[in-house]
Amino acid sequence: MLLLNTSRMTALHLLLIICAGLLLQVAAGVAVAAWRLKYVAQQAPQSNEQAKRSATGGAWPGWRDFRITGRQFEDASKSQCSFYLQPVDGKLLTDFKPGQYITVSLPIGATADGGKPLEAGSERRLIRCYSLSDQPDPSVYRLTIKRALAPANRSDLPPGLASNYLHDLVQVGDVLKLKAPAGQFFLDSDATVPAVFIAGGIGITPMVSMLRWSLVNQPQRAVHLFYGVRNSADHAFKSQLEALAGSTPAFTLHVVYSSAGPSDVLDRDYQHAGYIDIDLLRYTLAHCRHQFYVCGPPPMMQSLVPALRDWGVQEADIHYESFGPATVRPAIPSSNEPLAGTVVSWDVRLNRSGRTLVWDGQDNNLLDFVERQGVAVDSGCRSGSCGTCEAKLVSGAVRYVDQPDYDISPGHCLLCVAMPTSALVLEA
Image 1 (cartoon, rainbow, N blue to C red):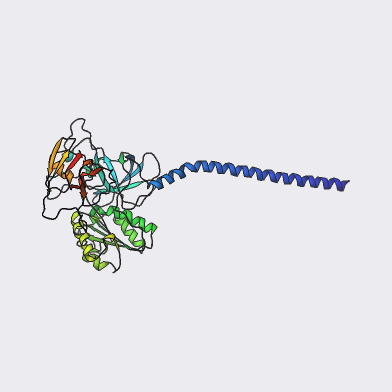
Image 2: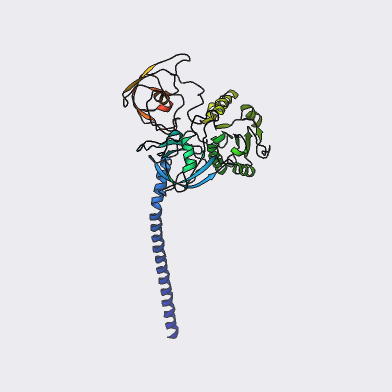
């Protein structure tokens, strides 16, 4: 009996143990299932939002509020200031293409050009385009803006209104309105072709964006940066660029000073004296295919880009962005461009102002033309980037010497880079 009872008790204990194990497995399964449901519920909105951003390339319609979260001078003379901007809505930013720009709306409501007071109630906004100066970051944009002084040989002209406003009045905590990143000047992702970045002055900003992205995502790609400035006082990102060059074998830095200061030392602060020209590129670069990216002031662009073509660089391997209005002519003129020496006149009807003007070919674009005739038109970048001067083209046709970056609405044109090829009627 004792043995029988013991056997029965042992069997009962085994049965209880098995049942307990099954209950634990069921409970664990329920817990895992509940956790999975909760996790999916939490993650689904973020995944959908990320997929939506990926599908749209990170763009958003119209203007978006960004708060200034930091300021930092990038050169010894404190003429180039970086502004860090984060979206007020707190949403993540998706990748932009390294080299692209941001359109900024500035509430210049207190003073007009040259510092003259505006009339009461004449609130105005100034539109400008600035290159993003760092690699894509999901939480912040960086713009580096140089203070534009009055030209040394034209003291009668005012300093740059937008850049001085940003330097003097925009502080941490202020909110600015931005459009989504845009532009056709960006790095080709083919890592098999060495990249050559050529920057003059503040033209360094898109190059830093492309450089930093390339070094992180394509560490084996051969990269050269030719950076021309006057001297160490104007040398932006000096310590950053030197650190990158010292730690990255694939990156070669070529700094060119046109007017070295007394304390500037060759081979320490800069590698070449003078200016960036085709001879320097020929002497420095290996004899193979390169992709060239050029951004700088008009004199550099007007000399260097044609020189690259003459050197035999294929047009597809020359990428450039100019300061202000287009300063570099395309390699092949447009087929509908009038022959040199011919003068073509067209009637240009402006419906809003009720005036009919005669285009006589004296101006570089329609914006310059209507302003010379005393017609006020809203404008911003004056280079086909921001879209502020977009006007409805009621009838007629225009041409663009350089294709605008801005995505023009059907049936419209950008006055700042357009020239008429027939009589026009504009809603302007």
